[in-house]
Image (cartoon, rainbow, N blue to C red; front, side):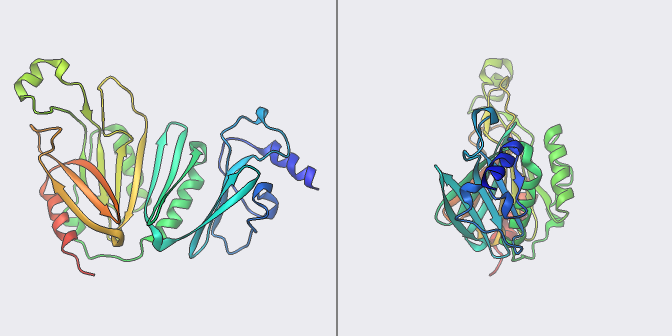
Length: 299
C-alpha cells in the first residue's frame, strides 16, 4: 500500500499548489506530524521547486503543508525527511503579504515574533487566494467607524495593470475604497524642474505605481516589488499587503517626498507592531482626512 501511495503521489506531482482532502493525500513526509480532520477549513500542500524527472517515488515531494482551522493556522515545513510544525493563532498575525514575480510567488505572514515566508508557484494562486481570504476573515475582526465615502478617490491610477488589479480587488471585497494612489513619476532628487526636462539623462529612476485601499476592518497596500526602477528596466513583480486596522498603531503622511520634490507626492507610513509599511502616494485632502480620522479613532 505504501509503494502504491508513493507511486500515485509521484505520478500526480507537479509545480502547482494542491488541495489535501483526506489522509491519503497528505504527503508521507508529514504523516507523523499531521492528521487530517473534517474541522479543517482548508488544507493544501506546496511542492518542492524541483522537476519531477529529478525525483523518484518515495522521495519527499513537498516542502510545505498548510492547514487552516477556525482558530489557528498550522504550517508544516519539510526538514530533510522530517517535518517541523508551527501553530499560528489569528490574533498573532500583524499583516499578510502576497508577492508575485511571474511564476515565483511568496505568501508571507508577519507575526508578532517572527516573519514566515512560504514560496509557491503562481499556478496555484486560486488556492492561495482562498487561504488569504480565510485568514483575513479571522484576523481582522474589529471594525472602526471611518467615513470612507468622504475620502474615496473614485478614479485611480492610469496604469492599465493597476487599473485591472484595482477592479479585481474591489470586486472581491466591495467594502474596500481606494484612498490613495501614485501612478508613477520620475525621480528628481532635488534637480530643478527645467534642468530635469532638458537633460533626459537626469531621469535615471522613476517611482513605481502604488495604490492604498481601506475598509472599516483593514488597509490594503498594492505596490511593485521595488519602489523605484530605471525607466527601461522591466519589473513584473508586485506585492499586496493586508493589515488589520486593529493591529495598526499609526498612519502618517510625510512630505514632500525627498524623491520627487517638484510634485505633490508624500510618503505614507503604516505602523503595525514593530513593522512599518511605506509607500508614496499623491498628496490629497482625501488621504489627510483619513489619517486624521484613523489616528483619532478610539479603542
